[in-house]
Image (cartoon, rainbow, N blue to C red; front, side, top):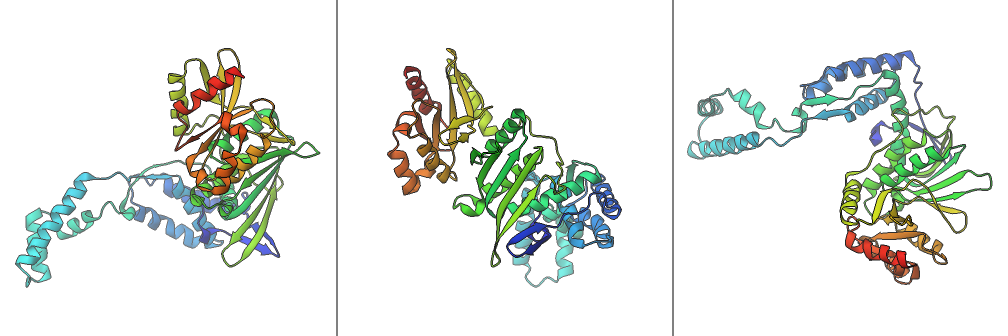
Length: 406
């Protein structure tokens, strides 16, 4: 992800537009290829050595250094460094501190050279080696374990997408319009939306296009940094749709709010494969536990929309299927989903049959308005439950038994 100092954009009136690069530009491709060569051969090098190898390429780039540094940042994001805790180094450091502390206390008048010689004798190593080893676990000394390479062209496409992602970290609302999408690609998109723990208002307009409104991180008061990152990571999935348009309200401190608008004609291209079967660890754990504990029901990630009142739709988290073939969807509301929960309760208020089981994070109930909406909802009283981090089987199974009796 690009940091704020690496974003390039233009502001005109109340509009903001990222400054995309030409992925076919010869100079850009040449510099991208040189940087990639440095990272491909970096295994075993420290962060400092890697930065020193990249610097001449960045300095010599025949275009803005901000672009070159942005390309370097994206390559660093694809680099795995050794960040494991080194217990031997911790023990060595404690021992060295203890020995040097005792030496200084016993011989306060010793000069620096004599002090170094005595330390060298005690540890049987040169002072320079001891000094280098002392903080070998600091970030600048971490060594490269692995780098995930890709082509120069893909790096430039990744850079353009990253410009948009960095702006989305500062958005208050994101609206997506999708047209000409088939059912399978829509399912994949909404699965990814849910796996990123993003909730959206989904509806169709008169033309049949889907309109998806997602809260931005700046509209929330809970875990905005994590939520903003999830929203930015979701954006590339939109690029796999045949016809799309994104409008986002971007806000920089002391610069007011500006509208970002881009569509399938912007030149943005996917830089990775379409999301297929990614399942977060906590989701997989819940599924496995459910299958182990609840024998009469099957659970799987939801694959279809649930139509709601007023031409709105819901894409739930799970689909639960009883061995009698009765089905019910499960939708989870996390602590940053307050507005979506109250809207969902309103949409289900006059439901003639159970459409969803609603799981609500306990942290949401700290909001008096949300707590009041939950307490006054007859639907939630019958088909809702509260959870802490993830749903529990003990809370869910009584609702499934109630469902079978309806």
